Each structure stands twice: as structure tokens, then as C-alpha cells.
Amino acid sequence: MDDFTKRVMEKDPGEKEFHQAVKEVLVSVKPVLDRNPEYRRAAVLERIVEPERVILFRVPWMDDEGQVYVNRGFRVEMNSAIGPYKGGLRFHPSVNLGIMKFLAFEQVFKNSLTTLSMGGGKGGADFNPKGKSDNEIMRFCQSFMSELFRHIGPHTDIPAGDIGVGAREIGYLFGMYKKLRNEFTGVLTGKSLNWGGSLIRPEATGYGCVYFAAEMLATRNDNLEGKTCLVSGSGNVAQYTAEKILHLGGKVVTLSDSTGYIFDEQGIDSEKLDFIKHLKNIKRDRIERYVETYPSAVYVPADPSLDHNPLWNHKADCAFPSATENEIQQKDAQNMINNGVFVVCEGANMPSTPEAVDIFLDNRTLYAPGKAANAGGVAVSGLEMAQNSMRLNWPVEEVNSRLKIIMKSIHQTCLNAAEEYNKPDDYVTGANIAGFVKVVNAMLDQGLV
Ligand code: NDP
Image (cartoon, rainbow, N blue to C red):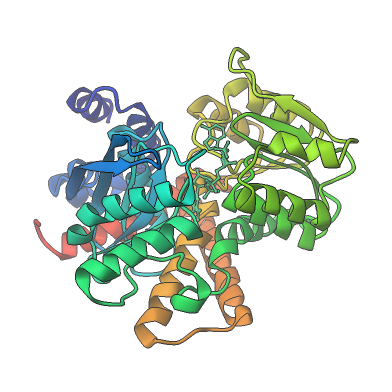
């Protein structure tokens, strides 16, 4: 295993997030390989870490003043053993091939856990949408799709949103795809409701994450009623995580963006949450504005010189990291434990460093890794694809109840796999093993392709 990890690292040096994601999965699945020698003979590890295809392309675009810029676009088609590639697009200046591969790799296991037939992929660009006008965003999306369209399709690869790609971007991307292909198909998910979107898709990742936390709490005869919750981020996942926590009787005291966080000891109630949604989704402004309207809250600017994020250093019961990868460092995890946090449910992808995860596992925290806890988003994307194929729209109750059933099933699947391999209550091992076994069995069934 060590040799294998070393080879992966030497082959693609510098892809540190990808190496981190691979290592975590390998540690979990080692007992599966020991029990099933045919997997080693079929080199399933070597195959599963290698993307089936990587597309890298130039994205030229023009700003409102006529200045031309060039960004780099990516689509990593990681694994199609159990269905067409499926996974979001991220527009953020930090995007590079290593981050795309890590997200695509995680997506393979996540999609496998959803109970739906979806392979894994991920894409995006190192483009910063912040401060850009709607017209600039539209031109960028059109240029991006003018290359991507030849690689995707409703039965091949179905992208969706992620950081920096929401309803507005999906609209512009879809418009260009439709024009180039001259067809109206469910090639993207996260579409607006009146042209093929699904009810509950915007809410799905956040709601699903809180349903997962509720399932974990239920194993200890507990629930979210009266629980104080730390939430990071203030985008799509964070907003609907906070909303569902409120529905279930919990109290949300923090939210953040990349410039800092707010702490509202009285709780961010639904009126305050509406303020945040308007601030972030319509005005596209900074979270620090919150304290101008709600002066009893405090704003703490981000300080990159610190070895921890003070957001995670408040008394609380539950934490829902919903911003970005590696946002919880070792010291943050220890601060959480010291402050009474006993549930950590990841809305973001890989928000905890390996050292932080070890602290959660050592302290018997109810810790759910993103690939299980945030799978509700892609699951409802799968339901959007099903509705598009049938040319039907399901009502809210139907989609929400399917989402709940799927999250419950993912939770149980993780517990069962963990139990089978003598790691009771270890959701990391459970998620990795269950996701892995389904995909590699499909790979074996389909031969050496
Ligand atoms: P959004 O773009 O809607 O929101 C992202 C939030 O995280 C913003 O508040 C943003 O702040 C903050 N953020 C982003 N990058 C950083 C950073 N480097 N440091 C600090 N804060 C940062 O994205 P989503 O809510 O969709 O995604 C959040 C996480 O959830 C990501 O890890 C994503 O991969 C994951 N996820 C999303 C799914 C979805 O359905 N959308 C599905 C499954 C997982 P700012 O506004 O200042 O940039």
C-alpha cells in the first residue's frame, strides 16, 4: 500500500489534494483487498486512481472594457463503471488539475453511495467570478461551453454546479450548449425550475447533510432540537444547511466567507438567514455587512497567519463545515472537542485535514465525511435527470422524501460496511468501503476497459 501511494505521488507530484484523497481511501479499503485477492490481480487500485479521461482547454473571454483574458478549463472524467460521469463545475482562482482530480475521485465514491447509477467526474476553471458583471460571467460561461459541449451529453457526462457555479452560471452554460447542439436535453443539473430544474435541488446538499447528522444523532437516541451549531461558508450548501438546522430546532451561531466569519450568539434565525441569502445571492456582497444590520453579532476577519480558524473555537454541539477543502486543521479539531462539539457533518468536500479527522475518530465524534454527508446534492441531481428523461416534474414532497430516504440509506450503508470490517461507527471506513466495492465490482464485470 505504501509503495502504491508513493507511486501515485511520484507520478503526479504537486497534486497534494488528490494524494490526500487517495491515501484516505486506500487506508480504508486495504482490508477489502486483503479479503478479495481478485481485486489485486485485476489492478483495481491502479485503475481507479487513473482518470478515464482528462480534458484541459483554453477559455478566452473579454471583459466589459474590451480587455481579453485567458483562463484554463478542466473536465476530469474519472470513472464511468456504474453510470455516466456526473459531478459539478467549480469556478475559483485556486482550481488546478490536482484539485479537479481530488474532487472527481471523491465524486466516484459519493455517487456510488447515492444508490443511483452515476459515475464520477468534476470540472471547472481557474476563473474568479467575484466582482465580475453578469455580462462578463455570461461571456466566460459561453466560451467555457464552446469547448466543453463536445465532451458532454445527457448519457455521457452531466455537469452541475459547485463553488462559484450557481443557477446563473448553469443558465448561461445551458444556453450555449443548447445553441451548439441544437437540442434541449438534461445535460446539466441545477437548472432553473421553469426550464427543467428539480424542486429541492438548490436545497439538497445542505438539507441532505442535516438529515445525515440527524441519522447519526439518532444512533445515540438524540436529535438536533436545541443543539448549537457552527456552520462555515455562506454559499449554497451553508445556507440550506442552516435552514434545515432551524427546521429541526437547532441554533446556528456562525457563517463565513473567504474574508471572515460572523458569530451571532443569539442565533441566526430564519429572518436573519433571509438577509444572508439576499446579501450573498443577489447583492453578492461580503458577510461582514451582517453586523451593520444585526449589531449584536460580531464579525471576525480571516487571519491567514493563525494556525487555526477562530470560527471553530466556540461552545457548540455540532459543526457543519460548508466552505472548502482543508478548512479544519488539527488545532481546530482539538478546539471543537474542547468546546463540546460531538457531531461533525461535512457539507464541503474534504474540509478536514487528515490530522483533524484522526482527532475526531480518537474522540468518538459522530464524524461524517463529505462523500457520505453531502451526497444529497448529487442524489437530487440524479432525480433531476430522471425527471428530465420522463419530461415530468415531481412535487416538493416527493423529491424531499426521496432525498430523506437516500440519506438514510447512505447512513445505513456506511454503518453496515464499517461493521462488516470491524470498525463500528467509523463512517470514514464505511463510506470508502461501500463506495469502492460497488464501483470495482462493476469494473470487474465490464472487463479490462
Ligand atoms: P458556493 O460558491 O455557493 O459557496 C462557497 C462558500 O465557501 C462561500 O461562502 C465562499 O466564500 C466560501 N469559500 C470558498 N472558498 C473558500 C476558501 N478558499 N476559503 C474560505 N472560504 C471559502 O459553493 P457551495 O456552497 O456550492 O460549495 C461549498 C462546498 O460544498 C464545496 O466544498 C463544494 O465542493 C461542496 N459541495 C457542494 C455541492 C453543491 O451541491 N453545491 C455538493 C456537494 C459538495 P466567498 O464567497 O468569499 O468566496
